[in-house]
Amino acid sequence: MGKISATLVKQLRDRTQAPMGDCKDALVETDGDLDKAVDLLRAKTKVSDGGDRSTAEGAVRFDLSDDKRSVAIVELCCETDFAARNENFQNLLGLITKTVLEQGIEDTDAALKVEAIAQGINEASSMTIHEAIKLGHAECRKLEGEGEIGTYVHHNGSVGVAVAVNAKAGTGSPELQGLLRDLAMHITAHDPSPVAVDRDGIPADLVAREKAVYLQQIEEDEKDRGKPENIKEKMVEGRLRKFYSDRALLEQKFVKNPEQSIKQLLEAQGKALGGEIKVAWFVRRAVGG
Image (cartoon, rainbow, N blue to C red; front, side, top):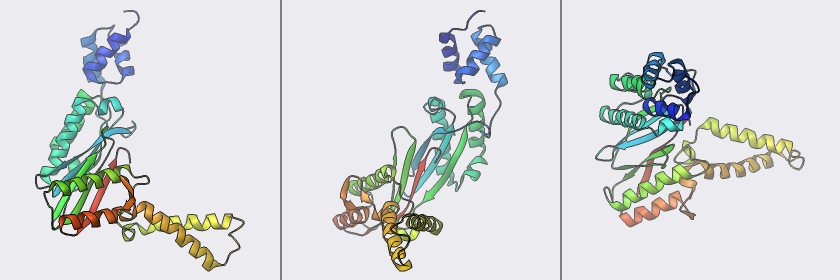
């Protein structure tokens, strides 16, 4: 057969979800026979663990239990955005998330030991999606004490957040659920993203790195390097206050109302609902992040 048409390549791509280059090569090798090309791709495809193929695309998903006190958090990665939007990929993501929630799976390694999950990933890689598929993250988080968990996933599925609050009043109310969604959307959208609920929760090594950077900046500034050490320390403390306000959730300015901090938002909502509201924890998950 002569030149392989783009239409024929697309037909094979639609049937197999294999990369365009592989589809063209298979059609050339089978002299343009579509059915033989499908079989050839299936025969040549090897199950991959994604070790040598980039899995920079994908999607995240968060599934809540009926009582909103447990949440499954899953990140599934693939090679292309096209595959991430594929129905087979989304079905696999749904299967994994449901299994993680139902079985209370604690981490990614445990998830990969579940036969249904491992088999689903292998079959997707070799037979339906024809791309390297990698389970980037999987866990089931639970809330201790009274309260609820809320979630938000960006429309393209690339980033999402689960946030848990302890609250003695308002549980199950539209007001608390609205607050949870606002908090999750804030954590998703805020730049830079928070790394802890409050400043005490920020990892010490991250704070130390920031301090080292600030001190180096001072030493490289002709106006500042000659100042007394106690003045330099005060300058560093001032810059750290900005760092804390950027990375500690409670100190951040609410994205929907920059005149209000997240701490102030929680205080106002708690007063309206008749009880204190505290953020217990949050998880922000982005594809490849």
